[in-house]
Image (tube, rainbow, N blue to C red; front, side, top):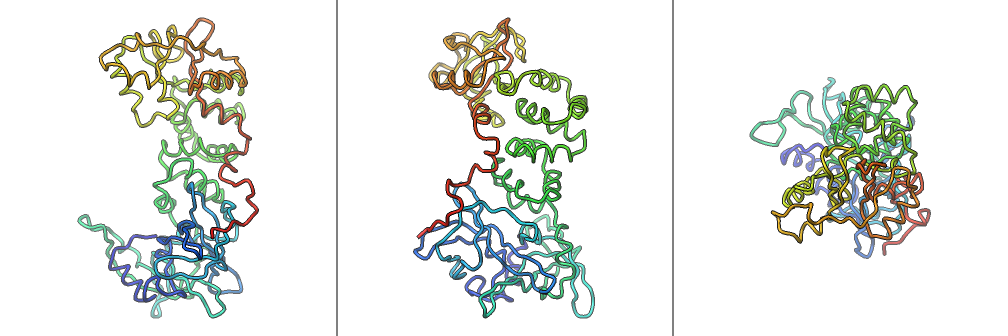
Length: 450
């Protein structure tokens, strides 16, 4: 929702008195701040958006349901027929909720994600005004059906920010939805940046779910709006088809930048899905060292240690202090799995390294004096993997020794990389697990929260 300041909010409320106290009129921006409860007062989730549909035979778009965020940031669809009350700062439902993950259909429009903050033309007092939608008002009629009735609009060109205040200046007004021209046709004009603002607090895996549910064109727009690091993190969490679609849709130079920002093993997996000529085109645009790592990974079979490993684990020399090692594993950009283990090698310390000496686990680092050298506390008992070791062998090694990560060395004892438990899980789960990861076992059943 456009954050238009206290004055603008008051302006909206004058048109729908009592804010959400009324059961028949509410602005979507207000609705999206509310928790959803069942009839017994147990919280079901929180409203994240409102779903509407357009029709050639109806002037007013019909409101068909709510997108509600439940446990584990999963989003489900709650039909408006299940909403019994919108009052007292909360939404009350019948208590029966279908736990299937919400997937937007082609004829559906999300109010906050697709309509708010997009340019429109409004017929006002005999003239056409250029404006920007800041909120949408919905209303329930006597037959208990909900529809879009009004739009809260700011005149175009007057939405600049005061550098000393977060409030936007400019004239605002509420117009009947019938006076908003081309509402359906122009819905895609909302900036992808505005959509991302709604999800800026999401982890990459959760944002990936949101992006997966978008239409391909919208997905491409959102990908273009994300910075390289964020997009790389999100792509790693998407199903393979979405990964390929996004990467192929990018300019070659940016696609190469995204591959460089991804974990090497994930980038290699994605490259392996592309035609050889496209692989080579992207590798040629990449940094030479990064491209060399990926070329090496592409030579291994997918279900071997070489195919699963990352070429960028935490590597230090034996003379490094424990304090130095702890500083390295504290880096925010390191994944949890990689941060648990330091691999100790002779110089050079970039893969392929000098001779592999052993590993140090983070718990051991925490128990030793900071000034001591890590070369004195090496774990040498775990036999390193070779690039050709099978997925089954790797899985047994991780389980037998309760390990999070294992080194991969070549025939000369040089460290090539490391396999972590998350890489293994990614390969032993079903291929479509990213699409189904939040589905309950009986997703077709309606579950009562009463």
